Image (cartoon, rainbow, N blue to C red; front, side, top):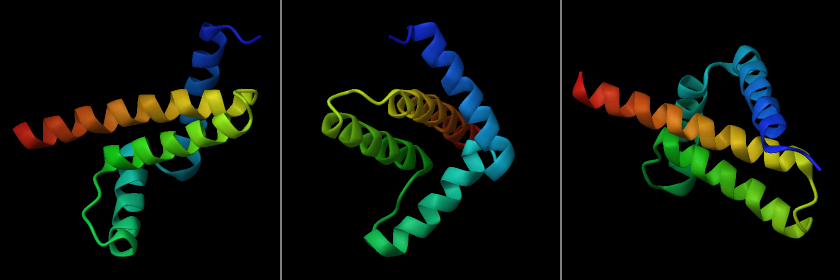
Length: 95
């Protein structure tokens, strides 16, 4: 059984590692949103990317009866990234 503090620490490490490999969430999620827009035919915001990726992890957890620690870690990471890009979007709107 994974303790919540351990899960959150693992999510923090995963987000930091992926940020170094791919780009910080704000830039990466903006890029993903720009790629999804022509596919979906609608505007996509960076925080919506986080929501959709979180939904993907939830769907996988449902299929695995909740027994996949990596998906729980990724879900927490997407929640953190979504909150971060939403805050950045709010700051951009007020600037």
